[in-house]
Length: 193
Picture: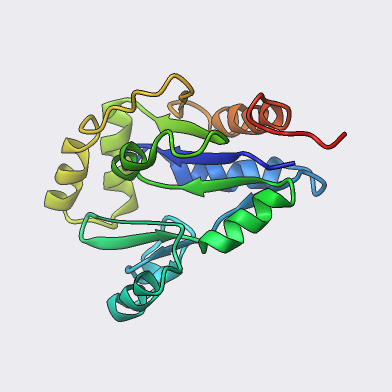
């Protein structure tokens, strides 16, 4: 069976990484779900999302050798998702693979994989603003720039599932875990006989 690829995206401050981290903790140890590694040219100790920090030179080297399944540039940093062969191997083993990507990059690759399931995690503008301010990772100007992009990329895909992360984190994480459970037997996934 080929496992589904769950592509999670959303505006800065929506709590994507918090939802994914909490969902990861809610999954049973038997759940056939793997979370792809995210590589960013930002120090790991800045806080916020779980990622592997790379220098710009390390990132460029890996990109030049085709070691990212996906890569893009946003907010002054380079972002990459796992090694394509790794993600392909996990899916070939029947695992559901979750990646945390960008809305802009998704628009470039949408439709390229019938097993792709887009998920938008979002929140109201006032929540985005408050979260960006609270995390203190950006300057006020950088946070304003991120907020300005919050509606910049509309995802027009009939498969899109939207999770609104405005309330309790557990509620959004539970919605995501339920979605993962439904994907195990969705039409895009072939089951072994």
